[in-house]
Image 1 (tube, rainbow, N blue to C red):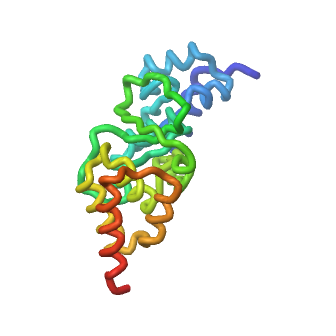
Image 2 (tube, rainbow, N blue to C red; image 1 turned 90 degrees about the vertical axis):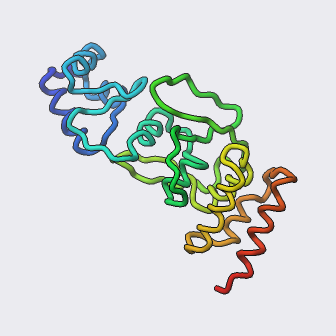
Length: 212
């Protein structure tokens, strides 16, 4: 592959920066650039190293979702979940100080001190269910659906608290963002603590009594 000049690389980076807020080292190297040229782009301020192997072009625009985008770009095999997903779906006013991500049981993530993440290990079938892909700042981001997230809040209530789980359930149903049946479906063949199940069943019973 032909090596490109620094000026060509800068132009490519700016073009990418107009399309998305994060680019990976692999993408840059695929243009014919060298790692040495990437380092020069960092030193000159054209690229900002967000985390291991990912960069933010200096000309890009970013939103309040940017940290989640960085996490998705760094760990594309994970899924945004629980309180972070609730916040994305506007089912809580709380802004989590860390991005909560689901990791498939048996897998592991490399350490990444630059990104504020908190991991939750999920086994199948739960891990692969209810995944939606939202394009944020030009990057595909995996986030659990509303119904899946509400179900997860009861199954992993120790992570978010039972009050958050109940509030999310009631708001999702009241605003008709999903159905009771959809939430219940995501609890099947999954373990829920015995002392938490009565709270879940009470939410279901109340919701089913609400006139359509």
